[in-house]
Figure 1 (cartoon, rainbow, N blue to C red):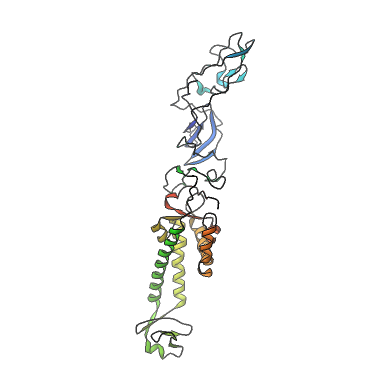
Figure 2: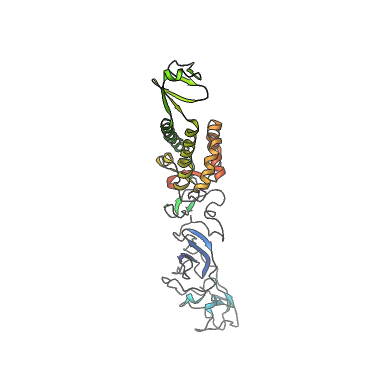
Length: 358
């Protein structure tokens, strides 16, 4: 049998309701796609055939078990209903008005009913991807399924991952089955070191900008101040925040300093990561904080992630964050688990996160 020239494929939706609708080689299906998101929407009408399609006649099957003919012949044969052969639909005949030019089988009086042979494997493999006819393409998702659910089925796997809208990621780029986009712990540690330096610089600026300066002699006349037990050059004051530099003692207002530091870390980590996908350190090391579909997590979830960092970081001397990110599925610390976020390479941002089981 010659290969049909109207194969199964994604084409622009002739009904105009979506970007693409899937043609299965015989009829328009419920499967539609918009911006890389696959869903379902019944046609509820018979759209026109794809303009590029050029239907070709099919071969008729050889007759068996001759009986009286039951199919009318000539141009009035009911092939518009799917192509009837012996009173049964032919699996090789297209359906609907779009099959103009396809001829229904015309049995002779001694050739009915006929039995169609088993269809040979088609060289055209239906692909649910509107961008590629690849075996890597995921199956159409059910109606209402969240973005990324189809490519995340089973926990992980290879194939083409749909990009999240607005991320600028390459559409439906191939993902090897053994690849884990969350294996970026080395870069995460590098980003943490950069962010720590940035925070220390900011905290120093806040302290010296709000502190009052005194000489060592002035501070030592205060009954609450005295020389440090470990260094005769350092001045310490009971219940006060002081820093000695040469002969100058800076006394800071701890309340103001703490408030400025909290506001800075909130903006630097929570707001920046929620809106841009990462802090300065993460941008410099090429990693991003994303949701399960590969898009940005947004400021509210980034705030939750930032708050739980108190447990992952200072309160556990950073052991909690190091251990959980090393052994958990998806290399997630507690903050990532609370915010349903992942840290992945920048090149993988925009695609659904497929995590290898551990």
